[in-house]
Length: 526
Image (cartoon, rainbow, N blue to C red; front, side, top):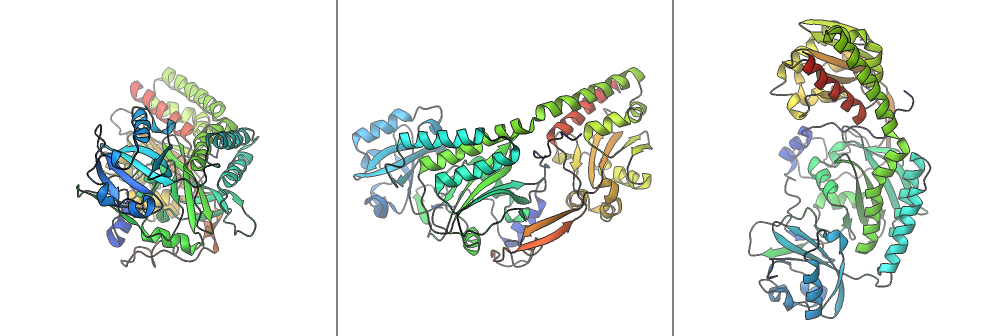
């Protein structure tokens, strides 16, 4: 099926056990969203509602707007805002979405600030950033830049052009030296698939970076916050003081401080300022637009918002270019044809094998095995029956306790079977290499209500030469993978080539959804 939209790949559900091992030996990052400190270029204030009494404040208020933080904490906001500015703030607190009102232009001690609002832990949060350039951040400039950026990317004629125009427009808006579109594969390794560079800036185009360099908690924060902004990589964090000993949730904060290891990592890359904008597809982090400046650089909130808008409209435009609906309609048609044939025959296992060609096309698989009533029947290119029997005995017998719990839909699917069993079924170690030629990609689905019979789709190996940004086995945030030493970032980013074995083409959502629907109907038959 040549029209198969390979670009939008499925990300496997997983528990990131590798991340847990890193955390256990190298430090807990589970609370990086509650660091208790901010970057010092702005001021962080938390207040109760409706009285607007300050409960949290960063210690840098004296430096930023000339008022000691002791004169702000436990007082109402009229201690820093003039009556007119306070009224502007109050008039916007009832907004359904602060995205529609941010930033508010307010004055503190006769200095203009962009005030960005959100709520966290039942607290109204105000983040005050000094206005960088009033003429550049006015509403007319914002509208013009926003309209041009969106118009340009909407005019792209292909997937490749869409990616390139998007990074070009973000570089134009921000003035950063390197903009990349950094896409995650199903195992959370990242690859630079588009790039825009200022003259003299080194390229990372095509390079890959291992999953453990952006652990699960970090990816979670990227997916939730439309912008991660670090204007000065080597800043000294400013503490947020409060009468509440528990640090406030800064998941959605613009000013949240960064772990030292990440800042050192950026510095080792030669980066002095960075921003990231998430691309989210089907509720999952699919990619990041990453921005690197070789010098410290401040960008107004309005300009960052334009880049966030580019990232937010990108998925819809991407899917329009790939026309996945046409592909989905085709595989759904095949699925319905198979179901009709099975229903007329009245025998699910026999019906599956009798319609093997349609099933293989529906799932873009090379082979299929049906395990029913203790017997295995195969069609197409599959592993040996004995290996399939061992696979079923191990994975499917653990249905309720080990494997399937990681997918609420009751499926196992992976395009890297070796990595999957490493995480979920170590007793199968050694099998992945043995069956790689025909079984690097595996999709297992129960076909009866008692979940004792299964259909297993197989995909063969597709060896790929990958270019990594450094040796993936030695380029983690640590001197050696899982070495129980202090957290230290890597310093080498030279291209490193590797022949990747044991992987197949990825399963995409439309194929998995078709198999899920097939499963649901088959369970109704028997």
